[in-house]
Length: 166
Image (cartoon, rainbow, N blue to C red; front, side, top):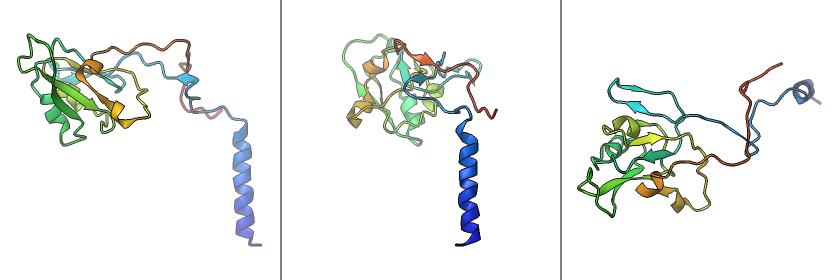
């Protein structure tokens, strides 16, 4: 046998054996989940974005004017926001159009939140969006208006998370 092959195999076993007894660096999803306090927001007055997780969007339908700036900001990036006709009468939205987001195409960049001049679109820390049918990834304005709920009995990861090489 080739000596390089033998040393390569033995080296791989040595690295594996060395790391067997080290503490894990990854989450054990779904038993452990991230405990994230806030989502990403943008303050137009100070022209700054706040630190936060970029998850599912939240839409304040009572503030939305149907200006389509969120869809315009998104069209050359992911093109996942469509303005759709909604039922009902909205005092701030005489056109009765609001954003609908396709999470199958969304890249969670946050530009739509930055572009909204009326502070009606934000990002929540909700990151579990998986479905078995991709048509369910399209969220209507009324689905976007629902606040995320904290899931029940979930073990959260400790504050000292991150890479550990003890």
